[in-house]
Amino acid sequence: MSKGTMKENHSQWSSRMGFMLAAAGSAVGLGNIWKFPYMAGEMGGSAFVLTYLLFMFIIGLPILVLEWLIGRRGQKNPIHTMEDVAISEGRSKAWRWVGIIGVLGSFLILSFYSVIGGWATDYIVLAAQGAFEGANGEITGQLFTDFLGNVNSLLIWHTVFMFATAFIVAMGVGAGLERGCKVMMPGLGVLLLVLVGYAQYVSGSAFYDAIQFLFTPNWSAISGKAILAALGHAFFSLSLGMGIMMAYGSYLGKNVNLLSTASTVVILDVIVAMLSGIAIFPLVFANGLQPGEGPGLIFVTLPIAFGNMAGGSILGILFFIFLTFAALTSSISLLEPTVELLEEKTHMGRKTATVVSSVVIWALGIACILSFNEWAEVKLFNKNIFDLLDYLTSKIMLPITGLGTVIFGAWMMNQKLICKELNLDSFWFKVWSILTKFIIPIAVIVILVYGFA
Ligand code: PFF
Image (cartoon, rainbow, N blue to C red; front, side, top):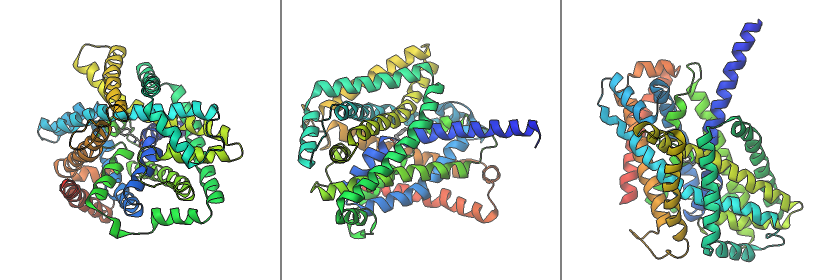
């Protein structure tokens, strides 16, 4: 191999690698480790889990590919990308609304995401203080309840987390974060495996109860609510429907194979969620906790493991550091669209735009914090502020923008070019077309309507 070829191969590899890291960094986050297990617990386990897995591959994967493909065509921020690609395909500029709703969604999600990121950060300190030592489910449950009641501390950690997010975005995502990702993400994976091993070791038969709860089909537990939740979570988990993957696609070289890269990201994302579930539910059952515990689930279960295993304090500290980091690689991707928009639509510089958007998001986060304590009774549509924000984004906005993306990609764009770009043979092109033209749009519409009903 000549020197020239080696160099070329190397640079291709490193750019694909950088892209994969950014995309996987955005996808893998609190959604996998915090949200997936508690939703599975609330929605009755396997019916939710299996539906979510199905949606990840038949709905999430094609939409991820389409977001990247459109982003690579447009080479701009999501709103202008949608506008430009629509115009070049001879369609209405109004398609930019897919980008606009996406940006709004990312803004709303970050307001509560940062609060939970703050919980993870505070748990680093609690682990370091030895707060979990020898704890059982009752103790960790009480710890978490006290924690939620303490507005000041929630506010401090939300502020710290939001500040860290804003700082990184203002500086531009430098080599530090990328390098950090390379260490932290595999580290998180290894720690999750250790936790799965521990859970199996201490939980005895509860381990098998957990596996059964998560994976043995129990279709009687399926409901419109669970299906809508699974769909929304597939979008949330892959960072879809917010233009974020579209924006990442705009940095993609022509030579990157979209289908195989997207498959890798989806598989990684699924593995982290599954490992989290398998680490957490045995502890739930073995300690007599409730699977439907809600958003506090991992904060109540995992400390039991850390408090009772050899070397648990160190592992606990490491785990919550990695979790915070995984949350940060997602939160920066959530802040980016709003900052970009402000930068372009106003005369603000990048730093001012970051400060302005962060402050507004931070303030909205305070309402979310209060919904866990003082405003717990403040309800709209029977939901507190946190639930409302989550519902509005995951179950309404993300599926709707995802639907817009797939309709645009399948009905408004030149299909021959897409087939060529994805290297599909005629059989797979048929599968792709049926999926994107019919199955996905119809499924999303039916689920949305059925979920509301
Ligand atoms: N996918 C991230 C997670 O699972 O934690 C959350 C997220 C990031 C959602 C970025 C949406 C997004 F645009």
